[in-house]
Length: 427
Image (cartoon, rainbow, N blue to C red; front, top):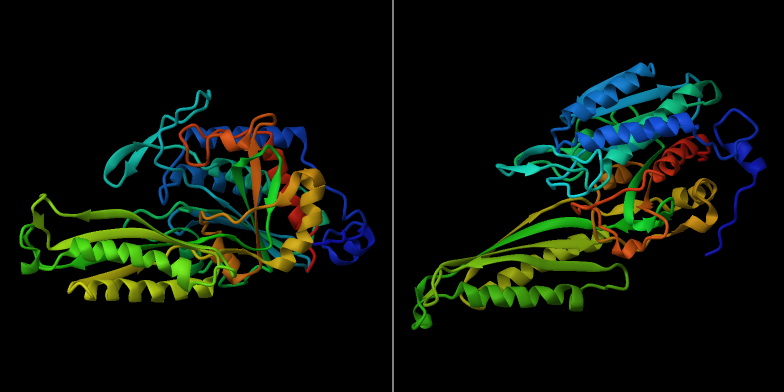
């Protein structure tokens, strides 16, 4: 694919920075970079689980208030939102960072490593920013400070979104991007575009990976209760065997992707993760419980998989004289980068990171709730490498690992991406 770089003259006629040097790549000062690093270390040392980001929200809100912004707190439990209004006509853009940590006990030797604990599923657990959300928050705090300081040169409005519970709300609770939107995040005005960054151990420091169209998969959980009739293992004809029915369900479900979905349109995965049933070797039980996950990159195919799964489950059970109840818990939708926005933003990525450090991301079967925003307005979500130069990213501890490590040099690149997206935005 050939992409032509936009000239500075063309940018100056479209973009919303009120100076002729619009195509100039803006850089943060060494002083601001050190602030971002300090914020990150403080956040890393004080992580909080989903919907429990009280201290994090306080730190963010106080920073935004100190910048002179009007701040909303308590959105989706602990979310923080502020809008920079320049008072001049121009685009309305949104920048998003997620705030929550994971139930992971940190095993790094960092001097600011986390020793925090929290409660997860009724148990005390270690808490760690093992996915890099501390970096996301710090970078957006830095971008907010820079943009406020340069407000006189800007037009339009910028919404800063500090979102809780990207990793998923606790059982029985709502949270994250979906709840923020449900509570009216975009009710008064929908941004023209929204931008997000995720740090990524699978790339070296400062490398940026992007993709037009689908980037990350939808994530859906399914539960199947297969019901038979208990009998002695020596006389299976006296009952209905849910284990055999469950086995056939597992096998037949595998043909959904391999035989019934047009995989030339988009990849898909249906995997079983839990199979539970029976208590003794010579007793055929009453029921078997199955649980699994569905990953997919096309919203229409997602619905097709749901329908085919129901058919496969019920028919496989029925042919064995059993019954099966299927429940699908829909999770995050497909994360889709608006193709036009991604194409227009490519020169900015190349300017900030360096052309040699920008590449196309593969499809990622993990999921992200940035997807909800991108269904409401054009979105761009990119990956920012944090594995130090000279190290093989393939061998680096992955996101969610207790050994997860982020090279803080990447904070400068991420902060500058947020700033330059805003300054060089063109419709």
